[in-house]
Every structure is written in C-alpha cells, then in structure tokens.
Length: 292
Figure (cartoon, rainbow, N blue to C red):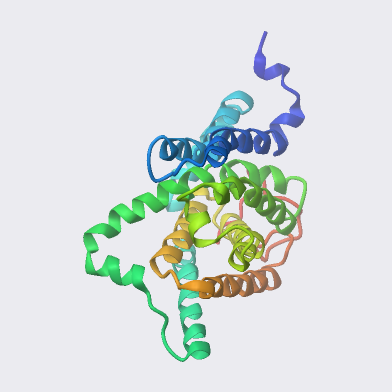
C-alpha cells in the first residue's frame, strides 16, 4: 500500500498538521525543563532547549518527506539555499530595516532621556571583535534558521492558499507567539531574562512585536519569490541587531514601536492582499511567485 496515496489531500495543503507537530515536538522537550526548573545554560537543560528549537525545521522536513512529491521537496530546499533569488533591493531591505528600528529607538531615547543610552553589549563586542562571529553563528542557530525552515518555509504558503497575506501573517504570528511561551518559564533563556513574564516588555514583544514581525517576514518572503532564505536573513538581522544594540530597561520596547510603524506603513503601501503591491489574489502558493 502506498502510504502517501492514502493520506487525505487536505493534510497535504493544510497548515494545521504542521502546527500540531511543530508545537508538539518543541514543547515535548521544553515543558519538562520549565517544570523541573533546569537552567538552560548548563546540561541537560541546554541540550533539551536545543532539541526543542529544532521543532519547526524537523516538522517541515518530515512532512515534506511524508506528504510532498519530488517537486515539493526540490522547491523547499531551493527556496532555502538560492542566494541569487534575492535581488539587491531586497538584500538591502533585509539587512537595513532591523538596524533602522534600533537606530531610531536610540534617537528616540536620546530625545526623551536627554542622553544616548548605554550600549554595553555593542561596546563589549567591538572591544573584542573576535567574539562577533561566534555570537552571530549562535544567533543564527538559536532561532532564525530552524524556525524559518518551518514557519515561512512550510506553513506560510499553506496559510496563503486560504487567506490573504495579512491574515496569514497574523495567524502565523499568533501561533509563533504561542510556540515561544514555554521559553518564558525556563531559567536562563533570553526570553525569561530580557522579557520577564507578564511585564510590559513581555506584552510588547509577544503580541505587537511578533505579529508585526510576522507581517514583515511575509512582506519580504512574498517579494523575493517566496524565498525562505530571505526570511532567515531578516529574522537573523532582527535578533542580531536586537542583541547587539540592546537597550536597557523599558527602553527595550522602543525598537518594537518603530517595527510596528514600519509594518503599518508596509500594509498601507503594499496592500493586505499579497503585501507585494501587485494584484488582489488571495494567495501566493507554489508557482505564483512575486519577485521584486
């Protein structure tokens, strides 16, 4: 019996089996860490944290093997590895928008506080430049690469087959937020250290921060011919810049405020249908590429 032929067609085009598998995989490893009080800066907590982070990527690869055909799998890996599929304009967008949010936040702090806030992380790395590359690699592997192999690499197309780009972004952003939740209960994670649970910083980062981040991800993804690589790079720049130019205290919310404004501008200029400024179709699936 052909297993693939016996799987309902709706499972192949629906994002929901993916979301169940991705959250299930990650939470299977994360919830025991949160409940036990293990510190993720040391073993075995760090091992369980790392395995859990792979949930979005592992789920996407498994479902592509089980549900996809050769064309699906070729399309999946091409979108992740094709550097030439991103035009110079969109490389510039991906690389400059996150730093722009941080620079505007620093200027905002200067106007409000009367002085430039201390940028201890940036000063520390510039004083020891040999640490920047390991830091960047850690940032890439800690979230952007394994997450985007699933969120944008697998789930977004399936959402856009049913809903427009804006609604798809908000649904994905909501699930993305829920996926992060166990991290806030785990000792030693970036989430619990920088955005304490139920604090003002938590609410800004988890709700408007992630939702507008998802909108910007879709905007870049749809305008680069559905490039998963572009989403990885944007996610990386968001995380790298946020850590490198980390602001102290409640000033950490300022970059999110600028990100929200940029996302609103993107929606208004490019339109909620596809976030590309072209056409009013509902979806951008395989073979319906928009390249900028």
